[in-house]
Image 1 (spheres, rainbow, N blue to C red):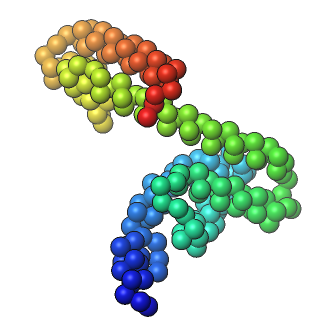
Image 2 (image 1 turned 60 degrees about the horizontal axis):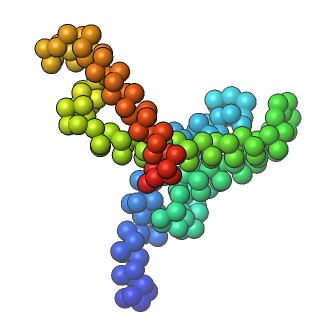
Image 3 (image 1 turned 90 degrees about the vertical axis):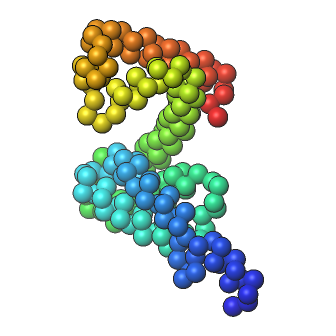
Length: 188
């Protein structure tokens, strides 16, 4: 191996020829989303697990084909869709409740919803960032694990009704801000 090739391989984090650290991070973060995408296209959760495992094998074998900077989840879902179809062909003896056209339609709808969800998330992050600091703090306290409005009120020494009214006001502001942001097409 030439020095330039070795340096290029080392900089990608792939000295042993396997997936680099960024790929592994992306791979692990999409597992739940992949499972949720596969489940409506097969009969049972066990089938979804089996298809997910086969999908993971393909993803890992094709890691070098992934282009950094592109949508990893969309790439992985395309592989999962093919694995669902392969699974269905292998399971031809089972009654198929959905034909392949419906499977493609479900997969396309899931991909569109993922984009929509991401746009909403980005808009919400932007809108939360525009809140007053004390409103941001209240939202963080309320939505931290194990928290509820009464507990937050007690921590702040405020009446629960006052905290619930503040949270309602903040939620309304956020909903309106997100709507405006999405209407403007400025979720990024």
